Image 1 (cartoon, rainbow, N blue to C red):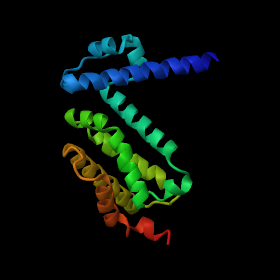
Image 2 (image 1 turned 180 degrees about the vertical axis):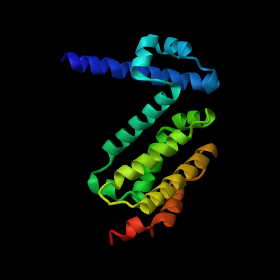
Image 3 (image 1 turned 45 degrees about the horizontal axis):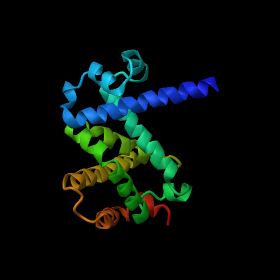
Length: 185
């Protein structure tokens, strides 16, 4: 019981820090945000901050990992997770990323959007884990995650004016003949 409350307190602290950083990123340049200001805004001590994080980038990276974990947990079973290049999965992914538009725009404003790209890379590698991937197959996955990243970033920069189903269709048409999908036939 004690460990549970300790873990809950640590998660609460981390959430306060994450929320405070995102709020500050809306009003200040990322580089200008100090740890003192961040901890004051989060209502936590500097010691609590340093128990959880080593830098502001580590906060943003942790948040990305939480988003990916939540995404994987929300998928509709192993078949949906394995068929990551279907139209339905692509649409689901875009809708999920759309939910975190504010976070992504904060990353972009802070010149930290590579955190999203790295998260997409990690997801691609983990979702295809059962496959014995060669270096070249990993590069294919990086190509795919890079394409998703680039399309998504431009789409949100354009205020998501294009219909999400159209964007998903464009992506699907480009990936439906990939080697990963051809292996399943």
